Image 1 (cartoon, rainbow, N blue to C red):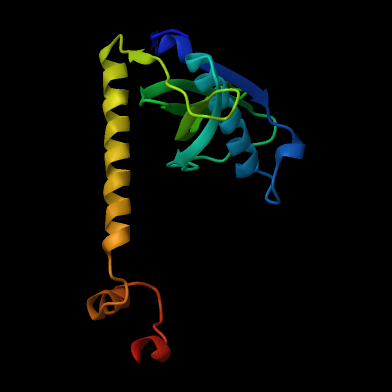
Image 2 (image 1 turned 90 degrees about the vertical axis):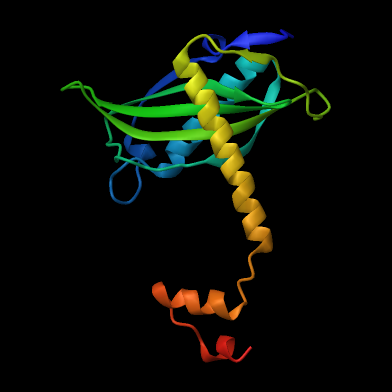
Length: 185
């Protein structure tokens, strides 16, 4: 295994023509099918980078920005944006192209956290990441910020008292009705 590897060494591109069998009930490509492709490219990217079998630990920020139509060519691009001790954050960008016109649209960007494993299923260290340009530095820092924000959110989740009178009163600004049974607690 390498002790360090470049972002370029992790890059993977996957293209696939979208077929009617990939569509949902509204005739658009099913989001679950796109997620499957994203998970496949995240696995390939992380495994290529680390030289190890990798598993998906988490998926962050899956926003479906534009629908994908039957007959469009979907291209997914992935690269390792961040490495920890045993984990990697793989950034994925999904573009669809209307083949006849060449019109392209950005459909999704997402971040998959992948963990490297050995033959016994134990976590293994991954190579250090060589940052070669300022765009790679930006992506690395963006990943650090997402990781830190996730930690802050989990800490808030663990300490937030959702049963407090203040928390229950705060719910009145949302589209909910609070049952009398809750208010009597």
